[in-house]
View 1 (cartoon, rainbow, N blue to C red):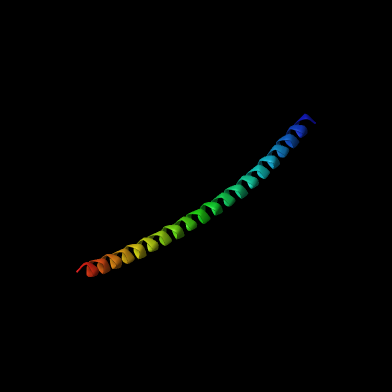
View 2 (cartoon, rainbow, N blue to C red):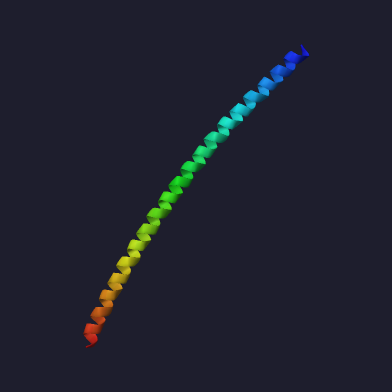
Length: 72
C-alpha cells in the first residue's frame, strides 16, 4: 500500500513536471517569435535609415553643387 502511494506520488510529480515543461516550451516559443519580430523590425528600420541617409546625402550634394554654381 505504501509502495502504491509512492508510485502515485511519483506519477503525480511526473505529470506536474510534464505540464511545467509544456508551459515552458510554449513560453520559449513565444519569446523566440517576439525575438524574430524584433530582429525583423530592427533590420527594416536600419534599411530605412540607410536609405534616408543616402537620399539626404545626395540632396545635400545637389544643393552644394547648386550653391557653387550660384556663387560663380
